[in-house]
Length: 119
Image (tube, rainbow, N blue to C red; front, top):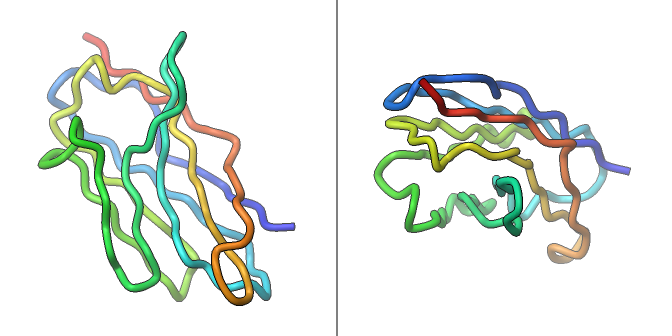
């Protein structure tokens, strides 16, 4: 069983910044993709950003130019730097990891961390 532990959420004013972190527990599986998704009240969970083991990155159009994802492979950690935050970024942010022996066979989720952007 792989555990994902998130940190870094909180309350911030519009235009402010937050940095989310997610650590995956050590395991024998290879991490192929790590990323962040978010879910606002009354809405479906949506992709925010992902990063592959080859450092390929993907971003939702709504966060391009404002959010940056990076990883520390040695520490099984992924970060999401969020700048120029807007009220519409308010959501529960979930860490996601896709692992496996020969490919991304298994998907794991963190417990979520609340991000609130409000004045």
